[in-house]
Amino acid sequence: MRLNKKITEGIVLMIFALVLVGSGIYSEVAKEPAGQSVEQTEDIAVAENAKAGIIASIESEESRMLDSMVEEKATLEKTITPVLVTAAKSEGKELSKTELEWQDKVMADVDSFLAIRKKGSVDAELLGKMYPTSVATVVKEGKEWTKIKSGKVTGYVRNSYLLYGLDAYKQAKKLCKKYAFVETDGLRVRAEADEEAKVLATADKGDKLLFDADAKKEDGWVAVEVKAGSGYVSSKYVTVELNTTTAKTIEEELEEQKKKLEESGLAKHDPMDVSDEEFTLLAAIIWCEAGCEPYEGQVAVGAVVLNRVRSSGFPNTIEGVIYQRGQFGPARNGALSRTLSDTSRISDSCYRAAKEALAGADPTNGKKYFHTVDGTRGQIIGSHVFL
Image (tube, rainbow, N blue to C red):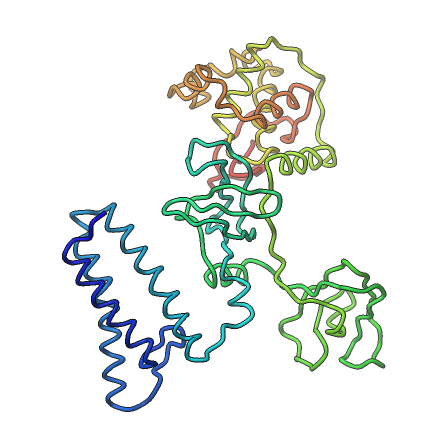
């Protein structure tokens, strides 16, 4: 795309700002002026105005070329920061260990999860999910989609839902607790930072102890919390890190949810035999109502349908329940019909959920209604409340 005159002027201003950065007059990374003289203070103001001019020159054109201008603005803003960091390094300002470790890291700025897809398209196959505490490594950054690797998943996520570098680190500190990860067997947790102090507990290699950020800092020791209270362990035998997570493949999530269902002591019903058409219909309504819900929530929606079939207050077939007037939105608005016209869009997890519900699993313990969480009291699974 050719840049218009306004953007060209902005780039000239950017170059001028970067020259000032290279000369040590202004450093955005340090957030402070390099000196205190009147001349330098004026130069700082010039640099500030130059950078502001870059953004302003772009924003003034957004009303006419909205889509392209947003891309140009994002590109310029992402370009300026690395150059300023490079300038800081050239002046002898070394990046911290944390800054280096998080330079190629991202986190998902979402409430529930961010879909990881096989290709950079919303229609591409779903490979896995990034959760709010998941950290991923950037493989290749694109204009709209970034290829990432996290855990066993490598795929594409939308840039607009990502936090990069130190912004991701700030998010991790806000969402993830810090732990001391034990690297030896028989590590003693002492009441005080002293090798002769009372032993409160012991830990083995692979254990993690909650870091006590409020305790007094002691050289050579790490403050942790155990059942017996706050104590200290030798810093030689632990690594203190944020307890971040990795993304999960769809298969991993299904196995976890299935295990959770098996261990939860759910109410069980007798298996229900249905035709292939009814099985597909049940999977389709699960997809329409709970395709993005956790697996337990998908089984729960299937169970609600079957609980109605078993009840004398509703039709006694899956088809009758789903198409009963005024009950299931997807049956009214055409979403169910569209899904049935192309059943390839129904995920494997929804088919599995339908099969499990038909086998007798019921996470709702007999509930016959559900809707989006809105404060109503009931059993909450994912974003649905079951009543």
